[in-house]
Amino acid sequence: GEDVEQSLFLSVREGDSSVINCTYTDSSSTYLYWYKQEPGAGLQLLTYIFSNMDMKQDQRLTVLLNKKDKHLSLRIADTQTGDSAIYFCADCPNNLFFGTGTRLTVIP
Amino acid sequence: GAVVSQHPSWVICKSGTSVKIECRSLDFQATTMFWYRQFPKQSLMLMATSNEGSKATYEQGVEKDKFLINHASLTLSTLTVTSAHPEDSSFYICSARDQRGVYNEQFFGPGTRLTVL
Image 1 (cartoon, rainbow over the protein chains, first blue to last red):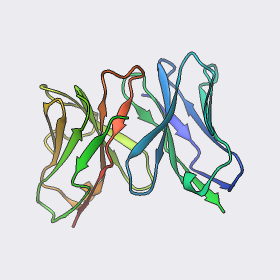
Image 2 (image 1 turned 45 degrees about the horizontal axis):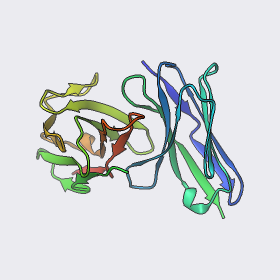
Image 3 (image 1 turned 60 degrees about the vertical axis):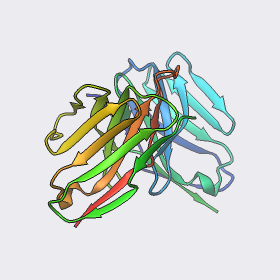
């Protein structure tokens, strides 16, 4: 089956950039997604990228996609304390497959 | 964006009782809804895919008699955890696919935390 992997933890100082990485195995997805989950809450779609793109920028968020290496990253510029959450990447060859989630901690 | 609600948001029950969780798409019709389960500090695990008017498709290892899914209308799907036991304690999240969306987005509910004593 599909395997989506992320590192579990990331700590950054407020104002720095955060980069969360994700690798996946199934390259047939049309879209790849980044979701944010705050404590005790459901998932919020942050952004997505079409599989024939290699970069997408949306305000403080930049998504990079390397299809050859099956690598997806999410960069958050000027990280704020409100960005502290768990971030999941997901691809969707048929159903959504989520990574393990990366817990981002922003240090004031 | 589209809104998906879940009810209840938190439930505590005794072992052996059954618990029903509702998932509603509030401003769109969802022919397909999904049920996920999330254990503490872990990722979401897809339990089943629910299509309106037909039987749900369960993922491998998910007991269909234990987790009953009904998708009777285009805006409502229910998950019933039958004869719940402490190991069923988890965070259950539903999502609904908006067929109008151009990028096949699933909108997630806020989740239901089930604690079985």
